[in-house]
Image (cartoon, rainbow, N blue to C red; front, side, top):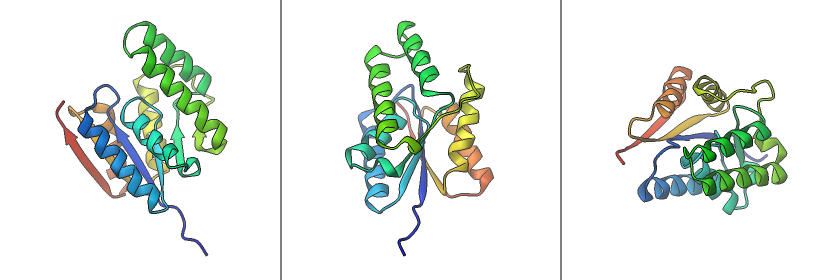
Length: 171
């Protein structure tokens, strides 16, 4: 009987990244996926995007769970609005939306939407962090500049009692 997939939460900063952070994320995800396990992320920019991108590049959509704080449609509107406000680059928003849409096409069960949430704010993202922790057997965090969202996920994982590995960066 095949061994059960071990789900590893990947958390990290969405605002700022570096070549080193991306290299570390991609290497970690490659190791997780090639060992037969899966990743759980939050569908945000930078670390979440890089982790999902690496798993998709390995043709392992079945080994990806992405928790969104809303439906993909609301999330798409939110990112388009944030791009129009200059908070994120338009290309970043387009790439993220395309990635999540592709995941939904390849593995509909891998994109976990929250149909009850119609607003996007910090509280909703932190609620999503709990869902990521709940679905994970361990957490690997890539924390840039002491990111509060990443710290929230780390704290939740420690409270759950699962193994937590933190990589800290100053960018």
